[in-house]
Amino acid sequence: MDIDQLHEIALKMVAPGKGILAADESTGTIAKRFKSIGLDNTEEHRRDWREMLFRTEPAMSEHISGVILFDETIRQKAKDGTPLVELIKASGSVPGIKVDSGAKDLAGSPGEKITEGLDGLRGRLEEYYRLGARFAKWRAVINIGGQGDDLVPSPYCIDTNVHALARYAALCQEANIVPIVEPEVIMDGDHDIERCYEVTEFTLKRLYQELFEQGIVLEGTILKPNMIVSGTDCPDQASREEVAELTVQCLKNTVPAAVPGIAFLSGGQSDEDATAHLNIMNAAYDLPWPLTFSYGRALQAAPLQAWNGKDVEAGQKAFNHRARMNGLAALGEWSE
Ligand code: 13P
Image (cartoon, rainbow, N blue to C red; front, side):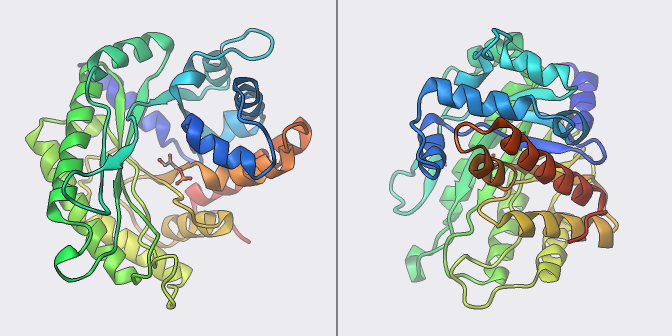
């Protein structure tokens, strides 16, 4: 393990005014995204869509520090034969790879998930390093819901998920790949923002205890958390200022200052909310780590509609705009 290299890559991933493009949708997930524009989910269409994004300037060189890829994409070539990984590197951005194989039902615990993908991971990481990946992502899914004795999440769900995250992180660091650790507390549900705070705080506390117990060097990691928000169906939706305040408070109470940076997921927030929340946190608070974005939907939804399967210019224009707005928010310099 080369700690200096891991630390250097981690810092590059959270460089000022830049953030991460999460373009690692599995083939099933991107089918849902393409369906919204009536596009068939073929390998060629997936290639065209991602090639369009990775060729977008100045978004890529000015605002995107790293790109999370899916297994198919890290092996794919652009229309002219250039590997997509080379397009990303040419822009100065770091290629990364999603290495989990998805969240599956947690045995004995209805309504809860456990993320799979540890078997054979050491070998896959070696191959991904050869293919150009310098960081990886593993997403744990923590649902909020249930009642009484069936309250979700259970400590069992959180423990099994953070254990898997730490095992993944250890294997990544052994392979000189920076692990993004992503424990996503899901927005779905009618719970209030306090419940999101409580579950996220507990999850992050357990996560950092487990990373410590499994010997992870925090300087060579990035955290990808959810923000503290009201459940999607909660009648009482917290203001943007409350979201920013509680998110900062929760992170300060749980995330060691040795972590080089925090890159949020958007998790189904609207594009504008995801940008505004990040901006308030950076503009109004004194923070021990850089806070930036690692957005999937909040960076891609508008470009996807504009591209609509064919219009590269419109797609790139929309991606330039979203990348610039989030780049400004990462500096606390965005305004509506
Ligand atoms: P969203 O920003 O769409 O939540 O996606 C980020 C991601 O990579 C989730 O794992």
